[in-house]
Length: 113
Image 1 (tube, helix red, strand yellow):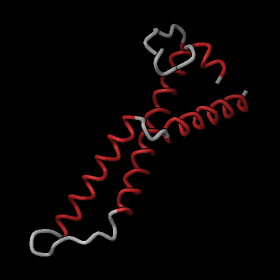
Image 2 (image 1 turned 90 degrees about the vertical axis):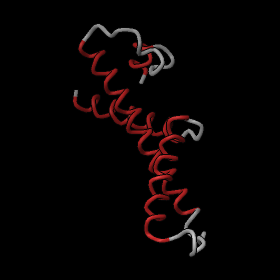
Image 3 (image 1 turned 135 degrees about the vertical axis):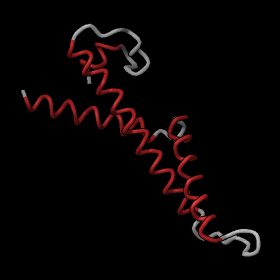
């Protein structure tokens, strides 16, 4: 991670506006962006599943709610809530996951040498 930090500064994702000049720098920037996207996707998935389990025991009024349509809508709603929560970064799961992904990539690249 030290070579990535030295290339992009202390916060590699915020400093990516600096144009990388070498092919290695371009690949590092691409890897960072993919790691960030993957980490956010995982956090969104985690938050969605957490909300689904929270609302699992709540019953709806049979006359004006419930049924398969509500189940589908609720699932889609939780999915979107999870995506929004992951993008805001307030939970912080994606930061830890992204750091782990970068460490795994560095370990893999150092073993390949």
